[in-house]
Length: 223
Image (cartoon, rainbow, N blue to C red; front, side, top):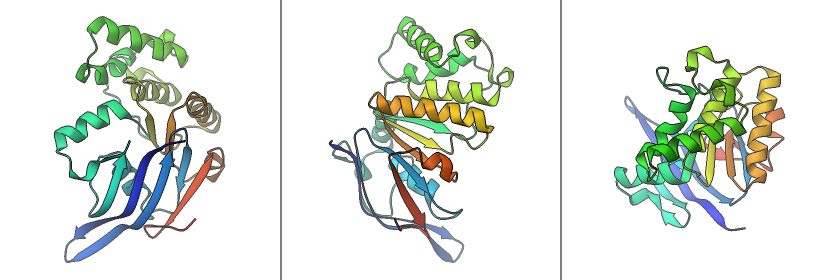
């Protein structure tokens, strides 16, 4: 398998008043195409910071991050936005759906910034939602959906531009056990179809379902 993401000696510092917080330190990590990786660790261990770095939502203070062989640390914000739009799909604990758009509207939105016609956006959005068991809820607004339904819409939205990588930040954190298990099965199915999945979680039972576990402590990879 080829590497899709590579971190070399990556550090991220934040200035907090007069002091500097070392959120992640000296991280080396190779993620291959088709991996399903769970990033675990206690609160404050650097999990979310690492997710933001891998997802090109933030830049490292030191070190290099490569996505598909391209060093993303020296790109302009507009170039980073294009990469995020094409190559990475994001799934969040709080769903981050737009409450005034229908389920279908939320899924179609990311495609507006790529080369899809309106008909293509609607056709693809419908298919993604139908594949995730949401065909009967296309015209419902997020407040009308359950937590599990909202997360299915969020996953469909993450898949809108057919990205290679899905970044899932505590994707089952706001869900009951059964619904969380359903979401994990969706992620495993996507991984079986060839998607690279990187998941941040505090739930070791969910982490154990990934192919690899990366443990963070005090901003460093310990295992």
